[in-house]
Length: 112
Image 1 (cartoon, one colour):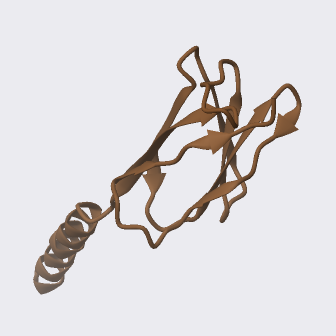
Image 2 (cartoon, rainbow, N blue to C red; image 1 turned 135 degrees about the vertical axis):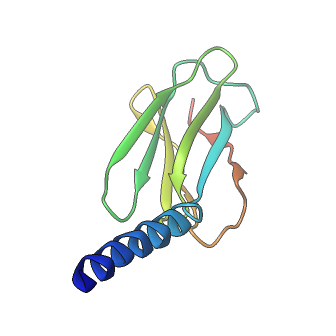
């Protein structure tokens, strides 16, 4: 009987610890615009977001306003952002895990 109580108590405590830890899992997002060097927005640019820990890549194709966004990004990982247009990449930018912002604004440029 004593072993049952200890087992149940341990299970409840484990559940509470997991529930408490889950509330501290945070996510962030990044938004921005892809532009030519003259500031004009780029329609049809492919924005690549690379997770520098797993090397997974997510992509977003810009619409006429040149805007892009990525949601639900881990706060414990660095990400690299690059834009490609007509086969040419613009310079990469890094989204650091040390940034405390929930929403980052990053604009990218591509060669014409």
